[in-house]
Length: 443
Image (cartoon, rainbow, N blue to C red; front, side, top):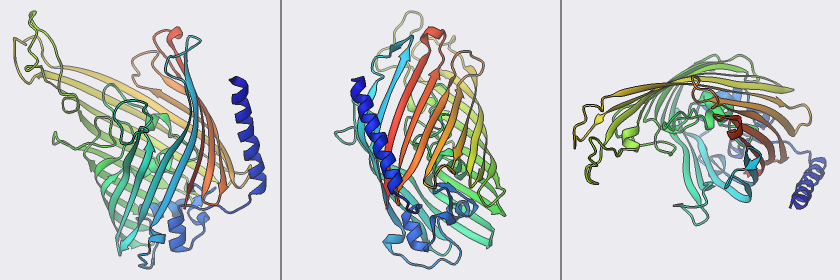
């Protein structure tokens, strides 16, 4: 089995090298907008993917430029993307592979539709819809028989008023994530996966993570590279991308950032204030008191909340030769458990309790653009501590990858990652190793 695996891996590497020598074409960004505005991708991007200052303004202005022509042709508004992957991975505990952890699979990962651009003066829209996306499940309910799903990612309407060439006010309505996070690992990026602190860092039973598309409204003011944003959102919940806010409270976030050169080098801060109702997503809890077990129709419903916040500092320094990027996050979660909503027996001893958890995490990434015009290797370190007052619970490790723009409208990405999760004793520490090969295109 090992010999055949190395044969397959070697064949893929040799094929990739041969194609690299044969290709020397210019790169392209989202093709719909290059077609609409007849602009080269370098107008908005560094190294074919990293948004420069012009590209950042284009994104935040509703994917439109000053003096745009009202051409409602579908070619300038719609692009289609597809991703195919090979995954290999396993988790080792005390020298042994953890049962059920091994992955060795080809998958048709996603087929997606990107739509966006101006509707008329000062109004624009954007939507990212996945007709098909691999869910990662192998059992249970699914949209399709192969455990895939359809998914709506971003979908919003935007109003943008330009007071000058480098000054604007915008309002977004719909489902989205903060632009500042999009520019630092959530949106366009070299790696196939997002930084752990943004995409996987959660605390307790609260599923909130920095990357999370939510329903809401945001207002932004941009002046000469400085942008301030404030938003009210429904908030997170369950395991979904967002939730219907049926406990009548809203979350809020704000960002402040400054792009200090034409390459898009930037420094910004992100703050989030949240309220997560565990009683809504997990309304039932069983228990006993005085030796009496309540009947199935009278189950204790605890009113439990998590009032939490997170503060992040994000930045990148970009040049033609490469870039350094990273983010640092710190947070606090305060879980409050109240008295039962239905008293079925004496509960005087079940008063409200509170527990506080502090978290911290970061990522740091170095990207190299000068090796080849179409090949960008990168190195990232991830770290996440879900409870800073508790020892031996951190997740950390390196990721090495390379992105190769083998097509005018696509690329091949490969990465190797090792994440170590500390446990109570070193014998229980988990080391997860993964290899991802992805081919994607957009036209």
